[in-house]
Image (cartoon, one colour):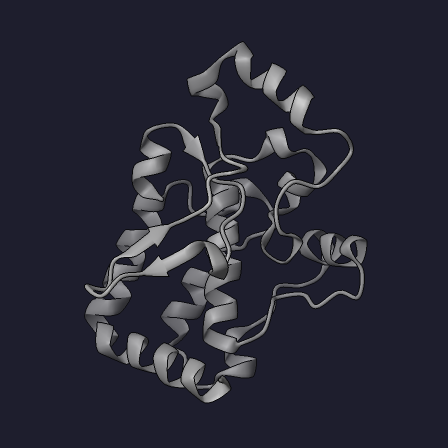
Length: 180
């Protein structure tokens, strides 16, 4: 994602099904069907594309969608992808989506208005440092989130250095296997 963002590409549909880990442990981002160039990269062409692709429908997967993207997909930027990655992280660690609404609208409203969930309510052995990273990734307002993937990576690397990569990966793999 960092590379895509550096090239001006906003994915707009980050979710577990669009991330693939290869044998070496590198994560590949899949499905660029909803991706667009950031407004700073695309100029007026972005406005035309948005007008064509947004016809009152929600673009993206609501369980992982940033509040600003739900209001207007042209509002999505790097921070929206970071929010979606945070939702994905929550799902991978807990086995649950952040907000399990019974309708699309209920889920979208929950992302905008409900308090942030706490990973440690579901998985009590998650380090507080990791919880703090998650909360900053999924802050309700874009300005309160990490501003770049570089910042997310830096914080994750610090956490990995303290707690170990194997701890994080072993927990994710073991719990996902146990769930089936």
